[in-house]
Image (cartoon, rainbow over all chains, first blue to last red; front, side, top):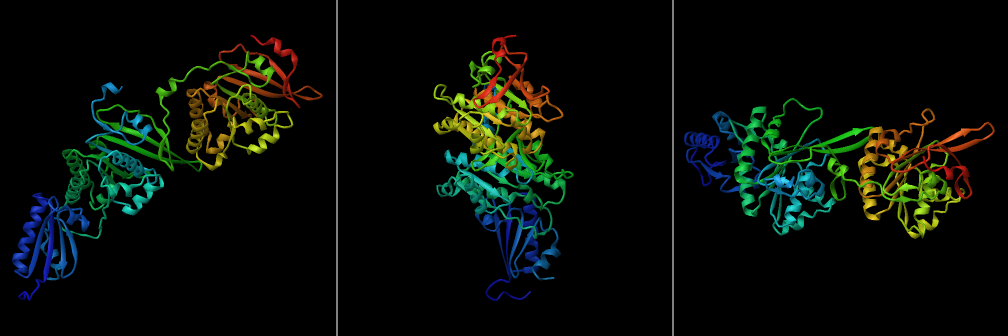
Length: 94
Length: 479
């Protein structure tokens, strides 16, 4: 992991549905990944669809939880994010 | 009926559908509309939403299949201007695109959709929601249990929120093994099934209410058509059928001998069939009635429905037997409705004809001939068409004079007549008789309800002055 030069390398948004089980699990899982693998070279925005429906609407996010990876390469991952490997692959780390 | 209804309802925006549902869709509940592609599921929902929006409600339309532009366009073709309602904030169309290429990683559900609906509904202050083609979204879930879970989740949530919701989903024919949607029938409060049958190259659409929790409904299948005015349900209900008035006073047949043989003439509002071989004079009998009813003296209106000839051809062909339809047509009291049976399905034929009847308000209807109705698709189609037409005429107290061509091998049991004979008040049979040196014509009144009619074979001929019965019969009228 290099040190962030200006902008963080990994930008993500996680759409959650309040405190629904899968959403809580996804939040825990992605937080762990961030802590372990991305350090401070990332941003993670948490969006609750019940608080900010317009954001979900704009991107056609119908399923929750949905992880939107904006950089380095746009990718949508739905589900509780239980498979860490898959996320690291999507981030281009493995 | 209405007194026992306890649940609140909202009009469907369609009078006939409201009467089938005893008032409308259930308020604060979910209604499921299912049917094959092309049955008009979306249109029924749109009609409901449009009607509510026009009446001041705010509505939200979530489309999983069509773009918002396509929804607006479709609505416009049946005269519903959604754009205008969107501008006033009463209507909101949202196309929910489903990305099936998403990477799946663990469990998920449709909560984001619920969040969007909740937020958007709140913003609009909408309480009426339609989710069109929900099956498209549920394709993301691979197994039946997951689909059922999501439907359960959606239904519970909608109820908690107190939304009045219309869900539509496709059904497949032949039915697939459990699609995960069967549970929706149990969950929702009202289920409507739309059915499109193609028989003998003719499309027939039918609507049926499968269930309605907490409310009565008419359980029959109702034919419907999709026209430029949207969905038009043709209600044929047992209630309506029982309510038709009995035949009225005598009206002249336009043929003095026939008046005598029938004990006075046809009964106003009766259903009459004149059957016979080709060329025997069925149309001449019908035209005599039309010309006489439309005369200045009688001043009545006749709608002449022909499945075979153009109006000019009918007028021309009646010149030689001395029946002048020109004055009647000129006065506007005689109108023609020319329809080729093959051009439309029986529902469309009936709908067009009923519209014409409603507009023209004729005293009498002539149909020449009902045997041609079979060309609308099948004997069943013809029977359906005729029985509903006859009942409509009876309800509206319109005399319905029908001609029917007999088949050579079954001279007495005319083709279409056999099926409808029980609802016909008067049946007249025309036959050729071989006297050895000539072919004569004779008429037999097979039945005529509520009259003292002739029971004899009566001879007639077609003169230059119309149908003439030989003198002997007029004195023998009674039984």
